Image (cartoon, rainbow, N blue to C red; front, side):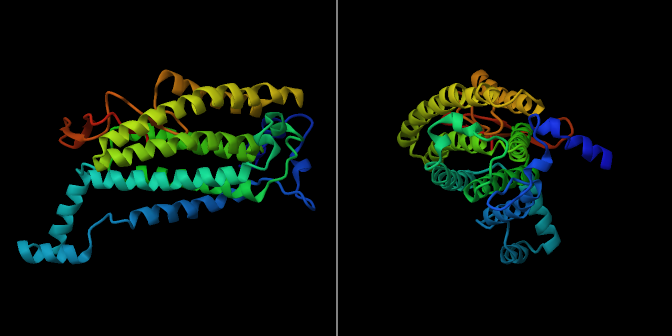
Length: 326
């Protein structure tokens, strides 16, 4: 294990020559990102998951006892019935409305926090400043909290996908949540934090509009939903198909070469960003922010099917052209 750890944290994998990990030790007035900083994301993710769970999911004990009296069943029989219904559950409009509301609340707060963390920073206006002094860039409090909250949120989504009823896009959601956490974790450890915050802000911006459109869709406000979808489509193209490749990827691919020679971390980070761009261009669900508008097919409503083993799966119907990777 010691040898594996030594190889994994080899300086040349993460840092440009001639910088060593020993050069990134905290000193007076200068703090650096540490892997240990990310440990808090686990309890925060569990807390976020618990907050969402407390919004009304599950069956109260009083309800179970009431059913027992009416049907003359034991509590065990009633619980087993509720459990079987949950395993075959079709997410209803109310449940989907709550999910969209939860994500909208997060993306609004995330966007607001991202703007507060970046508006007074020189690299927000001049992308060459992203690499000024790299990798010896001190960690700011605003960057710390922006990363912790964002990673905790996607950690809670990952836990929720694993524990919830399996939907048709179960595998896609797992892949995109893992990709999100991998990209954010790597950028944190390699001190790609300045560009990481810019990427997060660009992606969260259009997500606000998408979740708003879904809420109005589930509420039956079709005209409002379609209007927001038009704005979302424009925002998606501007942020993810213009700003993301021609500003941010250009920033990570070209500008660093003025400061240092390419190394593994440089290639790894850029390959992940280009892979993300290809998901957008090819129209596939998009890790690390797996949300997309499908104008002909949606996960709403779920249609129950029975496979050869007799268990139940759900295929997609269509309603108002909305789909979501979360």
